[in-house]
Image (cartoon, rainbow over all chains, first blue to last red; front, side, top):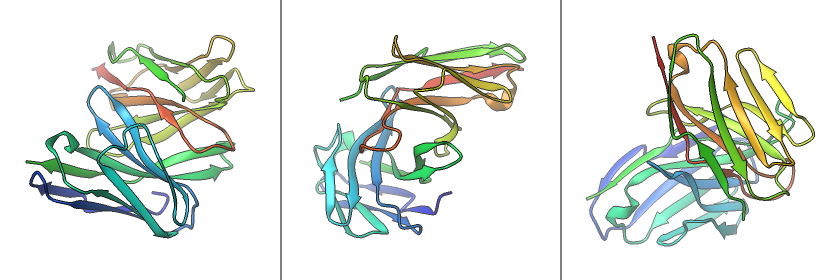
Length: 116
Length: 113
């Protein structure tokens, strides 16, 4: 599982409330990512981080913010959740994998978020 | 940025037949092309990859081919089995530098016993 854990795994929240998803890794990897997965859209990058306090936007960053105050944790926050943010959220880390001869992405188990 | 297109979106095959999934990419700087398999309710998991200086790679019943000139790559599954039923994603990105991987929209493969 590449040492990635996500929490919470399932959450139902009301429109307009703030929500924070946590991604925790145990192996000190520099790069961490947040993706959302929706039918017909595949996996779309929300934000990513390339080090402590170093983050950047992905292709669907509107309505989301992130923070990385320490290497092992990458937090995704929905400041005011909307129904369009109902999705499955995957955290991922980038590892240089000798078996696969290059950087590759390993995913956490996912967080199912429903905004009602 | 990179744009990865994947086809077909759904694919049904009889057990024992072959399945082929195709992807195209736009950024000639991409040089690493992994494939992921996602079972229902699970995380995407890496099953095979290919890098740009290689034209084909095989691992038992799965193989990937890459045509860098045409900017397309394919996943081939032979002798399909019911446990191959899943959603498959292709991706494109940098092998050793750069920050982002771009994913296709997925192919839902059903293997009919």
